[in-house]
Image (cartoon, rainbow, N blue to C red; front, side):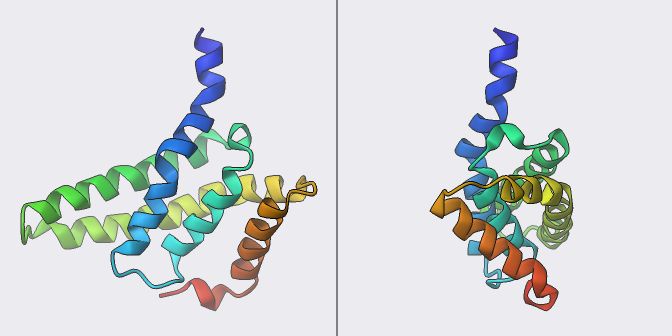
Amino acid sequence: MTTILAGRLPALFLSCGLVSVAASAMAQDAPAHGPAAQVQRQVAVLQSNPNGVSRDCLDALAEVHKTQDTISAEEDRSKDPDLDVARDVLETDLETAVQSCRADTTSICDKAGADPKLAKACAALDQSEADPKADQD
């Protein structure tokens, strides 16, 4: 039973939480570029093969999610002085996730077959990595 759960953990994790991670980070006045946008593009690729995602990538994405939850809780408490610090931590977590997931997304894209959705996600990822200025704030 543990082996089955361990094999499904990446798939469950990606499908349940990570789509909202990048989307919610972007919804907070984030521009259409930068680390939040890059993570969103990476998640689009990673969803095509959740079992091909490394533990480092999953851990980095979990940190992004945890920091996003902290920010949401602090926003609910009004003008908490720790909110700016939490936003800085989120930015760092997003940059870490981009670095941690880069090898996984590259591997998935290199092995991509004829799936048009994956091809589109990989093209968007390739375009953003080819133009580093597009992902800087």
